[in-house]
Length: 258
Image 1: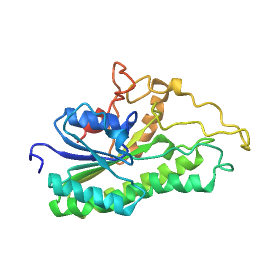
Image 2: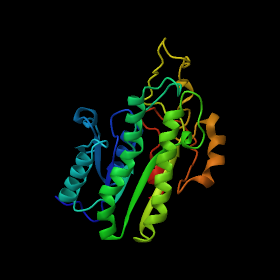
Image 3: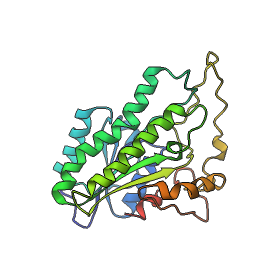
Image 4: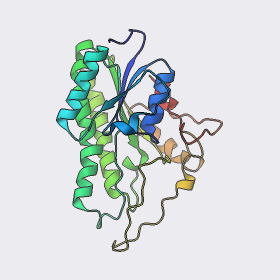
């Protein structure tokens, strides 16, 4: 059944419970959007509170899975208006200790996952000459740190792809927008500590107690955003006056610029 013209159709990858994508799905749905919440496993995307959120199986590391999911959306809803490339995996540990297979997985998900998604949805956006593509980036893409070198490299690559895509999309239509949202530390379910006693360097505990003092801009990292604003493709960063629960981290930062 096609979505009503007044209801934007949104696809969000990496929508498993407890993360940024999950909150984005709830917030877009609360604003009247038809939302396709995708993840690799159905059980992680089956607890949404809005009936307009439709679970969708998608593995961003598989070309076939991405194209199949996008085709399903087009068949059911008739179009896709907003796409959020949010799926990602962590990769913590000293550069000299990170297993190559783990680094490949991070690159395949965090970098090629964005590329696969863009290549799958842009033909439909180009045919309609309108649409919005959003990549969820990270401050680590601009400022690396010990024990986060591989993850930072994946985010830097995702930023470069997104920024280039923004320039190239102008040739398709001025109504096709590409945005990069740069986030700071967010308390969620995908930040485990991967250190082991055999590591060349010991990874200190991740300071999750410092995450999430505010939904979008943690007090202690706000200065980082001031330095980064001019380097983002298109990103509004706005401080909220009151903190919310960890389940509602403030997805409005993306929604308010759509």
